[in-house]
Length: 572
Image (cartoon, rainbow, N blue to C red; front, side, top):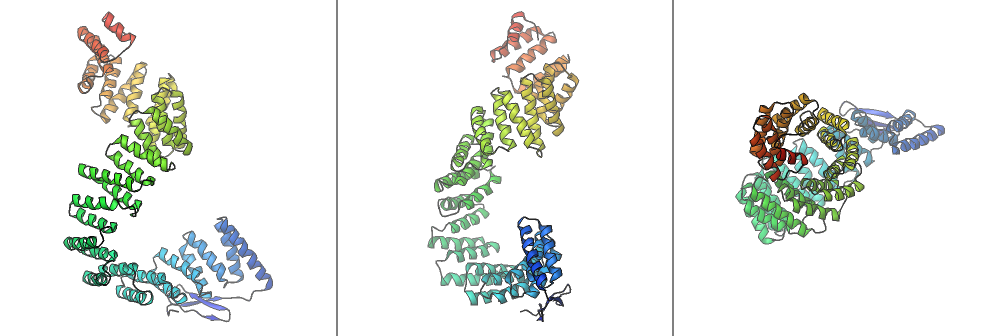
């Protein structure tokens, strides 16, 4: 037992840590009567029962009652310390845990609880002493020695940590963990020479052990000696060409030199190894996503994704991350195929369903989005995004009642994401408008703008629909103007503003905005018809007729347009 902990057990009394370091405090036991003994057993049972129910406050009361009867009841002291520790009341938890180890100094669980408390409070000095006690109790548990050495390392007591590592080697022999731990000490001491000497000795003793080459290459890499790093790793590769960890280390070294061709060559070899964990491959591929502006990085990462799916054909993660890579490369069809293959293997990953629906809606595959959306909702009925995407698909197929139902569900489920909520209410406004439920449509648009006043698409759509009804044109003009400020150069928004101005009989201003729209979107039939309407009301009737005919030629079909052309005059 260490000198810093003074434990005395005299005539039913124990000592505990005092608040002042190294000063003992007595935990005085009492003579427990038969009645008290029965009470203690009952309280202990009730305390454990309440703890199981997670009624921690009530549980603590029972253990506290035991301690009042018998202050040296170490089991109750331990339970109370554990409860307080779980509630982050570390000061009180420490007191009771120290009392417990004082009374029962050979119970490792009491010491392990105290160790957890000291780790939480970063009391490393006392933590070292606790591990001394655990080593005393069980000198053949290697983990306690490593924990003690690590605590010393954290305190920058590197010489003392080295002595513990020497003790570990004498007792348990060498190991990869021990080599790695020593390397940390050498690196912290700024002593890479000692690290390299030890590792080179290990390599000479066992040249087939790739771990020593990897550790040695890391020492050289941290020292900035990239050439020596490559020399060691290539030597290792020559001895064991099939070691994927050596390949990965080489890839890192080459990438640090900007030699991406060589790096990806090593990665392709490593990715072809089925024994290399799929999670490692996933992380490697994801690490390249921030560099996707480089077309070569994109191309090589896509190739790695394909290799991963071939090497792990039954692993959904391989297809999922391959889908992510393809999505970022804008290969949407292939991304969708990869995601769907991942779902065949495991349909319980919500994020993949969301990606599939996102792609289908963006590609206007509304039938596919409805089918997949319904299946996804059968698995994840409480996801607002799934209702939203499926509702969009229903709306685009003119099933607006169904869309409204799903959008309402989405709105009821989503309370935090204001941007998504704004989009939901915007879509509700669109569907209500299509059903000519204008009051509900306007209310939905107002909610959307309350959530996101600068939602340019809501401002544009709301303004346009008001102008079609000749209602609240001043508000429509204000909203349309704002949408163009937010998203300058959008021909659809420019057309809307032109049309609102037209409805306000501000024909000259309307002409300026419709010509802006047509300049960047010359083949839009609706905008050409609007241009004709504006020109007619400016007295340029021949030019108006030309625009109406152009609109018809571009595919615009309506009885009103036919009448305009036939009668050569504007009509609503």
